[in-house]
Amino acid sequence: MAKSGRSQGGIIGKVNNTSAGGCTLTNTTATGTFTTQPGTSLLNVLVVAGGGGGGAGSTPAGGGGAGGGGVRQSCCVSVSGATGYAVTVGGGGSSSSNSTPGATDKGNDSVAFCITSTGGGAGGRGGAPGGESPTLKGQDGGSGGGGAGQDNSRNKGCGNEPPVAPPQGENGGCGFCSGGDRGGGGGGGKGSAGTNGSSATAGAAGAGADYSPAFATGFGVCGLVAGGGGSTHQSGNTSAGGPGGGGAGSPSGTAGTTNTGGGGGASLSAPGAGAGGPGVVVTKELTKATGIWPMHAQYQKSVATTWP
Image 1 (tube, helix red, strand yellow):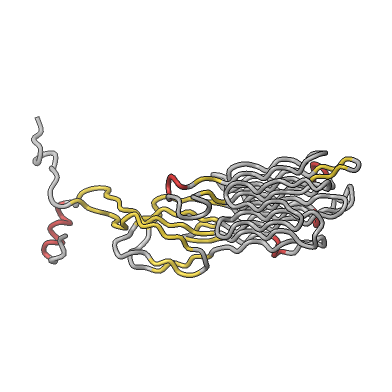
Image 2 (cartoon, rainbow, N blue to C red):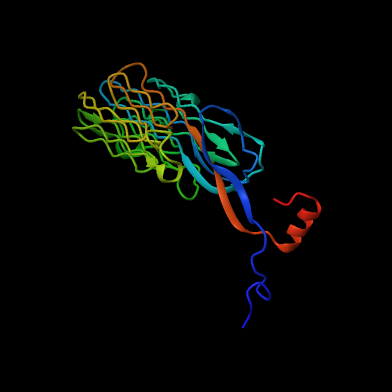
């Protein structure tokens, strides 16, 4: 029978703590530099992009809610201790107008540790029935913007664009157009797609996702991020923003919550609508022991007087 400490090698010396980050949580809310602690070599990362800007309604069509910013999570990212890393936190898309949407209506990407999350798509703009111009449709993005109440199934924005696995967000809902009844679709969220507008109601916004089990609750809305924006119906009916910072549909549109990546809410007929909420990058510096010191490493460190 093999004897412990001989043919099995045994356990000699101190535990090899490969990362000593103290499980420290940091929310980076603006573009800049994140610096690791001296003992950190591994961390978990959550990268949330900015939400899109809501769609402006226009008589006789409701506006579409904007998509929440894309969200990507990565575990056990290798880093060096006491080192600065560039972090880009994406801003929210601007409130939209009824004219051709510009690039600023879409949320901005967030980038950290070679992870890119895509900004949320802007909500569709209200227009004349049958308006099929892509300038009036919900935009694609991390989550897709909802379509305006003008064009039925051809006008929603797609989520998870460009595609990644697992998906960084969901689709927006379709707008509804039939006779005099025109409702916008809800913006997509990280957790669920926006729903379609109907003859009587504005489409509901998609929900965000809850990351509190991995990163606690000190960011987003108690750990929820990237809710979709609510939409509007020409009758005056509006829908709430999705849980996770999405702005509600309202007469002038409600902005997404700051540093949640929430999509902006649509307006009824105002010149603009709700802006998207800026994103956030959340890091957790890990305290993680993955093994023991091999004997040759113990000897070398002892000779060099660097043994722990």
